[in-house]
Image 1 (cartoon, rainbow, N blue to C red):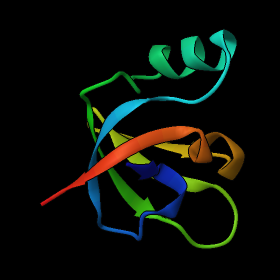
Image 2: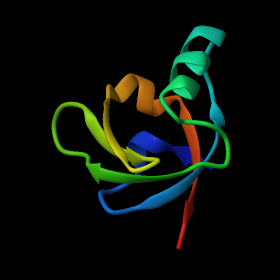
Image 3: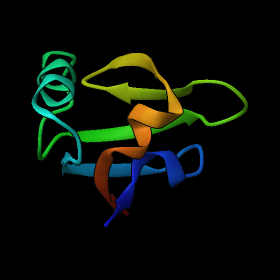
Length: 74
């Protein structure tokens, strides 16, 4: 189990949970980041992390991505 922030581009992972408060968890769930969902890191260069979730690319701040706990797959 690692944070989404630490994955290199092209990596797919399953979301296990969010290590944050209720507000952050709720906001991420509304954006599609729910436990069991598969995500893919599109770009992890400087600035926000670009992540594909449910077919949509979303930019996440690194602090938020650090709180999303995932398990790499493949």
